[in-house]
Image (cartoon, rainbow, N blue to C red; front, side, top):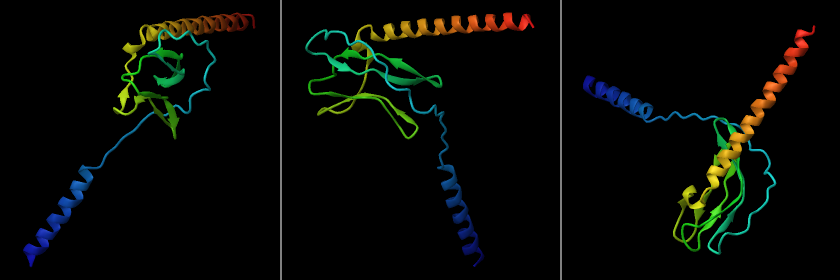
Length: 146
């Protein structure tokens, strides 16, 4: 009888521990929905094999950055672009899909589009820093005059 109780106790303990061990913990940072899309000029199609990818916001370091629309080559004939979207607090990246399956987007297909976006973002960040410095100097002048 003691062996049965002891083995039952051990089995119950092992079952409880195995379920605790397989528990998962996850966390994420949510930054909310992205801003509305920007307006921009669509460049001429560079060739018949290119498809237009509409511009979109994507999360980067706790904020959203804008990626202008661009022309890109699909990974295979018949593929179509599934645009990125925001769903219940989660960002879902865009991808190519079609009869041969899903392909993650490879920006090397886009020529220099990423470098152009990064350069524009650097210009915007520099402009924001300049504006912040101007505001700080303006506030300092007014505080000194008190």
